[in-house]
Amino acid sequence: MRNLSICLLFLSLEVFAGKIKKNEGPKLMVGIVVDQMRPDYLARFRNRLSENGFLRLMRDGHDCANTYINYLPSYTGPGHACIYTGSVPAFHGIASNDWIDRITGLPVYCTSDPKSSAIGGTQKAGRMSPVNMWANTITDELRLQSNFRSKVIAVSVKDRASILPGGHTASAAYWMDDSNGVFMSSSFYMSSLPDWVIAFNQRNLAKTYMQQDWNSLYPINTYHQSSEDQNAYEGKFTGELTTTFPHKTATLRLNDIKRTPWGNSIVSEFAKTAIEKEKLGQGEETDFLCISYSSTDYVGHMYGPNSIEIEDTYLRLDAEIAALLNYLDETVGAGQYTVFLTADHGVAHNPQYLIDRKVPAGFFFGDTLKQALNKSLALTYGSNTIIRSVAENFIWFSDSTLNAMKLNRDKIANDVMSLLRSNSEIQFAFDMHHINDAVVPNPIREMAINGYVPNRSGDILLLLKPAWLDAYALTGTTHGTWNPYDTHIPLIWYGWGIKPGITYRDIHMTDIAATIASLLRIQMPNACIGKTIPEVIK
Image 1 (cartoon, rainbow, N blue to C red):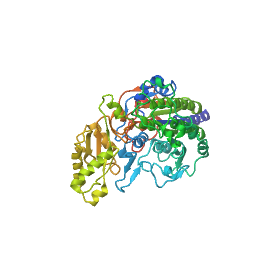
Image 2 (image 1 turned 135 degrees about the vertical axis):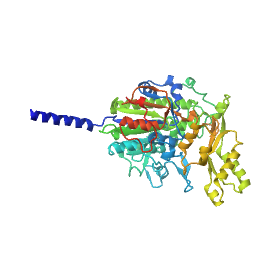
Image 3 (image 1 turned 90 degrees about the vertical axis):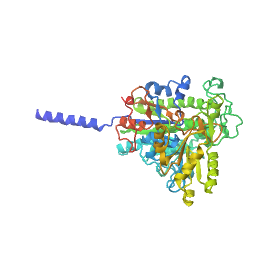
Image 4 (image 1 turned 180 degrees about the horizontal axis):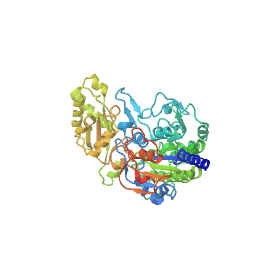
């Protein structure tokens, strides 16, 4: 009897040990970022969406309908960093897509890394890594949690949209070489491309896709949610005389694939190949696949949110999402993976489009303001180089000019602020060195503080009136402001561990990484300020 009891004890210990040893969680976590996606697109295009793409995610998943960016500026680099770090630029350091290093005085691209070299592409496109991001990511935490047995693969046509989600410890991050339409990486991740990536590139899919030309998916006269095909608000490809379909992509360069729906198609094909060749979701640990669809951003910039081109791009992306989910069902297993879908930022309407419909709006050109300010300051200080740049919502002083002339920075800032009062399109302007003195509503002040990185941000933050665009052209559109059209983003959860439903309370972009950490039972990223969304998790 005693021996039987001992045997039962050891058996129960083995069973218990087996239970605690097994890592419960999804086999694969899939993060999908749709660059420049406004959440109202889901309602606007709903009648034309398939049942198996976006609607499947919304119907069977959990929709956080009021998710917002909680910092400024709202651009791609900070957006992807925020999603995966659960933090804001003040902590993760990605102040914008581009900035001026206030210590060296040199311009910096958010993922540039002179110490890295290209793997599989040109040196210009390959000297990239996440070294400029100070915080780690939820993907880094997954790798740490599993003692690096979990695989993390990131892919996009944009380098920053792959590198920042993948984090510092990614198994691999891949992006497209703009010059030749192939996927590449850098020496930060590997010494050579895997054979399967080389084979993928040898298929020349970019050329194959571009040979199709871009015709509308449906007859033009059925796009009732969009403006007429020929209009004055949209940009054109090189050589085009009109903005109308069809767009002869076969005559364009391969790097123009990112400005067509085919950019999303090739990313989907690469992602599915990565799942197969890297055996994602087939191991004992949870793997993580980061996908960023960037063509929506390029098309949006060129044509605007009310174009047939953007509607057509989303209808095609809907089909890509459906195909990806079906592929995951077949390879990883239905109910064995978790997906979240969100955006790095939204987008504004073209101002002229709004003006023609009697909505207050306008264009703002940074270079014009820079010249005007320098001309006025030269009358007092004898230098027309005090303002170095007006870009991405900031006025940047020339530190070298101020230091050489021994000018008082605060006095220059006060003079600039006085000059700005004559610019009616600027609703608020405040000196970031004295932000507590700014007379501005608290929510906007908090967003400005969250986005301010002392050695990587400008001196005076400009907030334009609603629907005024910091533009580079009269056609197309852009983003970057605090306004809801730029900071209200979609957030949908689906699959393993997700409770179907909808949440209407306000959620922040920083909450995404915190929720993933709770779902996977791992540590939050080291600078995460977000909170778990409890309604999402079963």
